[in-house]
View (cartoon, rainbow, N blue to C red):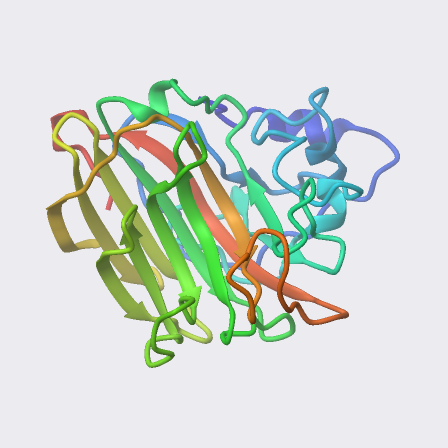
Length: 290
C-alpha cells in the first residue's frame, strides 16, 4: 500500500524547493512480505506534503500533534545516511518537540505522533499476524532529556485505556533510572519484553511481530545495515482491543502523578527523534523481512 509513485507527483509541484537528499548509503534491504502500511518517505517529498489530506497519502495530517502546529513545522529532514530499508529512494524524517507540542488539553505531555493514513481501530493493522518495522537514530543537536519518560512507538488500544505494545526511552516514571539510556519494549502491563542500549551515532533497526491470533509478540533487532535477528520471543502478550499505531514522541512530565494534565516540562524545548524504514508488513506464514 502507498507504493511510492507519488515521488514524481511531489517533485513536479512547482514553486517549492525540493527536500535535501540523504547521504549515500548501501542499497535498501529487500522487503519480502506484503506491505500493509508504508510510512517510508520518498526522497524529494516537501514537508508541506504532510499538512493536508489533499496531498498526504502516507500519514494522517490531523493527528497527533500540537493544536496550532502543522506537520511541516514538526518534521525535519536530517542529513543522515539512509536506514536499512530506505536505500536511495527514501529519506529519514525527524519528529520534533517544542513548547507548542500540546495535543488538545493534555498540558502535561509534549507530543507528536504520526499515524498511518489508513490505519483504523478495527482495520488490517489489528488482525492476523503483522510486523511493524522502524529504525531510529539520535540527533546530537536535539538531544532528549532522559530524566523524562518518552513513549516513542506504540499501538494504542481503541478505547485509549492502554497500549498493547510500547517502545520507550528515558527513565520510566516510578522506576529506577539505571536503564534510562536503554530503549525498552514493554507490553500493556509494563512488562519488559526487550531492552537494548541506545547507540549515540548508528541506526538501530527494530521489527515487532504481533500475532493477534495467538496473542504473542516476537522482537527482531539489528544495528546499522546488518540484517535483523530475533532477540526476544515469541512471548505471550495481550494484543486485544483494536487500536492504531503511533510513531514519534510522547514526553511525559516529572513531578506529578497526573501526567496528562500537569507536571514539569522544560521551556524552549527543542528535541527530536529520527526515524527511517517505517512500514507494517503482513507476516502470514511467518514472513518477516530481515
